[in-house]
Length: 326
Image (cartoon, rainbow, N blue to C red; front, side):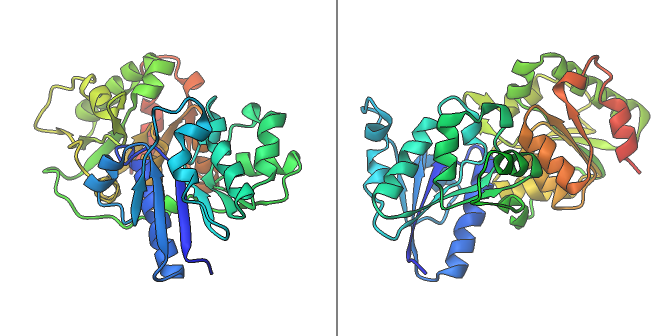
């Protein structure tokens, strides 16, 4: 087995789903290839150092570059013949700027390296001919749910297998949040931007929990990037009962958030990897979905999902929670 791995497509560990995928991948590679060297291409190395991602080197972008090849030149320069390059960005190919990642992929092929698209989801409607060429030329694609897997099979990809998101394997790390017997709620500014009514629905859900049940509430952030911060969205809920509601710290690691979620009686989550933390801990979970990844992963584990289009009034989540609770 090769002794050099390059991980890329990682946006920084303040996205704790990205942290979970990257950390679990590094741990797997260390187990399979003891003594290997792992380079991590990242947008925010300081975040990854803060959360002690165990890579040998952190490689950042050259923001003075004008093209993708120039911006990611420091990453491309690390690719050697026989290197194995893992794109660990999860759903990066769902977005309009996906060509930045294919630039690194094609550079890997040109330099005699292996290229793997890892733990991915891709919305079927974004796959055009240009993207399909890039996808088919990966040595391996691991799709984490059947929507992506079937879409790529139907488009002629033969380099694909279906396997669960590697973040399912993340080991929780114990942390005390000061309450127990709680329901975990996660809401993200991303879904609020897509549908502002979501915030009202989560607020009504919290009010229902406090008025009609004996459960407490843990408001759990999972992405805390400055431009996309769950902590800010959760504060906007403005739930008043401080004795039964805890806004969980925005300074925890992915493993600590998983521990918090694993102790919940139920979880309603807008972030896929907060839902994965619940799924892999046996917690009854409702995913609030806007993309293939949330729909597909919920289907794989046989748990309910509500699409944003189904949130039509402030009470849309309450009946779903009733079905989840014992």
